[in-house]
Image (cartoon, rainbow, N blue to C red):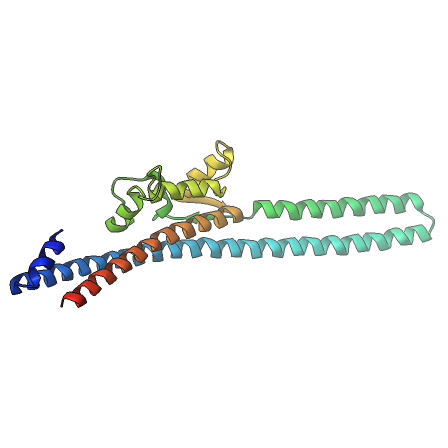
Length: 244
């Protein structure tokens, strides 16, 4: 409103024109500060996302290496037992040959089960004292980690949403819809809520990947704010140019 009044006076009043320029500069400065807040928040979310992704990849490589090792032992062991069983058959020791074949099958089965077990048990301790996801989940009035300008953007009701949900609430709903927390009411959901929104703990590969995906969505929503700010900056600059 102040800008509108000053615009009407600036055409005939030098003082009003100077005041208009001063107000435009103040608004531009605030927009630039808000853009810096957006960049800082998005960069932190991106850093945490990459940290989770990198650990998930390291765990996957370590797990695959162990599985290949077990499978190699299984193949070599099975081949050796086959040779022994064949030799016993040639020697007409059928009972011993059958026992050797059974042993070979048991060993192969054990290694197969062991490799599957490894794929489930690949875990690592992963800590996140600065937890952006926790801020979004709890929704405090003022965020300790997300700058005030960004936090206001995330917690105000969305004008285009008929239910008037905020961006923060919408983000949580998308996490749930994508299955990032597990089925509603399940033990997995309870474990992941404590894990993802706390200070960290023992993460599996899938836990890490889902955490990274949640941070990716958060980063995307934060970056959307920069588009609105850039459009506002364009309007201010064009307005100043047209009246200057």
